[in-house]
Image 1 (cartoon, helix red, strand yellow):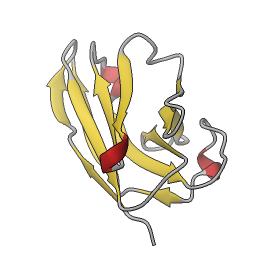
Image 2 (image 1 turned 60 degrees about the vertical axis):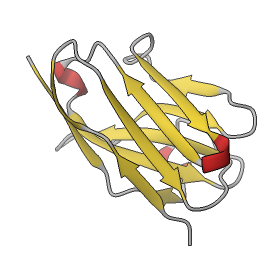
Image 3 (image 1 turned 90 degrees about the vertical axis):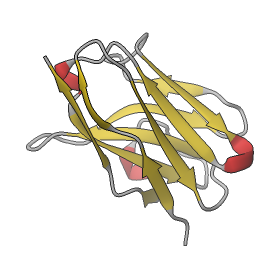
Length: 121
């Protein structure tokens, strides 16, 4: 069974930067980051298709976050800059192994345990 190993996250002041990484133990079709705050639904942040490198971003992070990958390492990165307090959440890495809609959490079969990002004002 595939496993996802997340790293990064932490606390930063508004305007700062953080990078999250997620390593998959097997091949994927796409990998994504979702985030969730208590009482709210999990929302998509960004995603990338492994072979094509095409990506998707939520409107709320466009221009501030950048997703990248090292295909040989099955590793995905989320470079977050100009962070805002509203970016505070638990960030989850997810992977799908077959054709999937990048923004649909129900299309992802494997999830990481989550890493906390806290942005203070």
